[in-house]
Image (cartoon, rainbow, N blue to C red; front, side, top):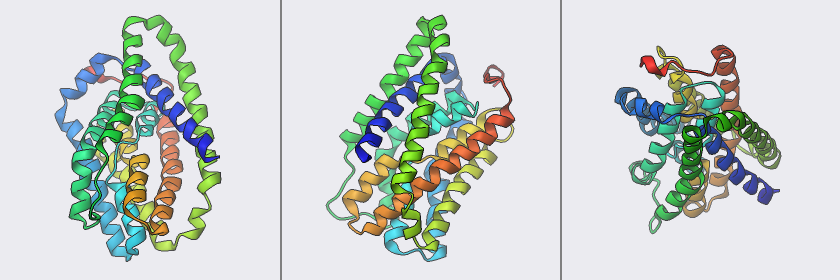
Length: 287
């Protein structure tokens, strides 16, 4: 089951980034770079607000060191690709979500170790495997995204016809992955004590809530900020946990974070999609 889920995760990552690229225009990405204040809010939210919330909850609730390390590592590892896909499904500012996704993954190797050192979680003799991170970024994000953008630019009619189909494939894979992951790992919640669960719930919902607040006043921005903040880079976090923390409670808590993170973000996506109405177009030209 785990091997099947890993294969589906790879297919999902490729299809979601291809779908996102096919639904996006270069000019909309250019508009994002001309709005550094809004883009900076997304970086601040992911690399400062979310880690501070997690660290505060872990400390305030007296979570054990093994479980607390997992909550914090998940919090300091932003850039999960599903965030951009959910922003697309919620009819949010897709260009902002994609720009943040790429920037967060590029900054992760620089800023994540700093947070881990600052919070005293670093283990002697360990370091981030930078090549693996960049290989994943290029293979599963940059290449399919670039292919989708190129198709949108060069083959607009073909892309308009096929983008909804690619998106439906990604949605189906997402449903299978969430159900499979919950079935496979859902029991971990019953093995966690109440304090880590509260810390995880607090971090996830604070991430989503602050993202919505940061985006108030501009159509589509709340969804982009909330969902890119709510979805963390679970793959990178689990690699760090596996390499640095032999205590099984740390891995258990990291899996528990994922079990809570996905359905929470899906629920917010569904609400935002209903509120956005039938049109998926954003008035980005007025920005």
